[in-house]
Image 1 (cartoon, rainbow, N blue to C red):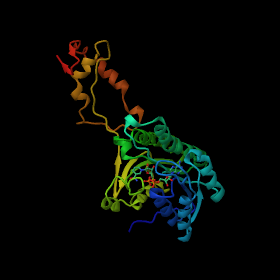
Image 2: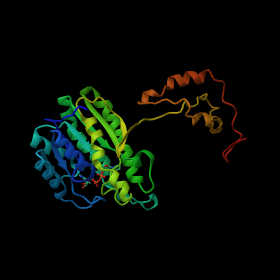
Image 3: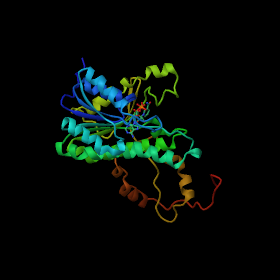
Image 4: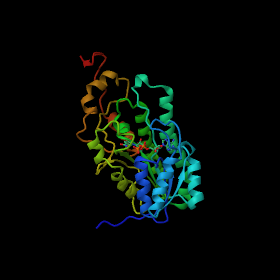
Length: 318
Ligand code: NAI
């Protein structure tokens, strides 16, 4: 039997926990002993309005089930107030789930500055603000677990989501950097691209598919990653409907050119197949993983690049 991972004495902040995925995390953490701050602005799917009812309903559910929780109604853009609620109610913060989110889907041609800015503000600045407020607490206590929320749209791009997808991918690199900076202080940050039935997805998926995509099926990975015994740090996972997979960057073996004045656009075209060949890839995890000194050494030994001025700019090399 799998060991029950418990969170007794830990305080968890879940942003956007008044519905959907956040609610599932809040209930699950509370059921395993954690004190939970249920943050929710109570906004519409597009980010308009506010209401205390979202967070309060989830807090009621937790308390009725014998758990410990408090509401917070601030926007994640006021992250310090959310952390303040946790400190006032429970005297500590151990785990932060940056989950709150909204959508303003529009084709790029129709997207306005405010569609762009609002999405960036809630997802990127919001995650930054709550994390920033918790960071020193995590550092001082030498423990912290952070989950950021990306999206498949962010990893792969998606029609109508230039604002949302760019914000979501930003959270992947935000996580990768937090993981590197936090590791020494036992602060682990991981990022998920979930898929689940919620008001966010109910209009884009058929009912039978939605039924298989319970938010409850995302919570186990989130909780595993946040447990004190878990070492995983700086990783990206796709998760939903009972499927969990880790993603990583893959770099083609690449091509090395003599870096001198014979290195021209046409020279790139000559080795295009090599540049895009993934037969012997590498899996870089830091900027230092690109061995530029080694590439330079290799390039030194090469003869000058073949003359390529005769490249015709119709995509063919003459
Ligand atoms: P949801 O719409 O059910 O829940 C989001 C919650 O965030 C809402 O209760 C809303 O009131 C709250 N919220 C919005 N703006 C806020 C703000 N400024 N401050 C505090 N709370 C705010 O959506 P769902 O599906 O549960 O999404 C949760 C997260 O997962 C989001 O970040 C979303 O982008 C992401 N996601 C969800 C997917 C899915 O399949 N449901 C797919 C990929 C990503």
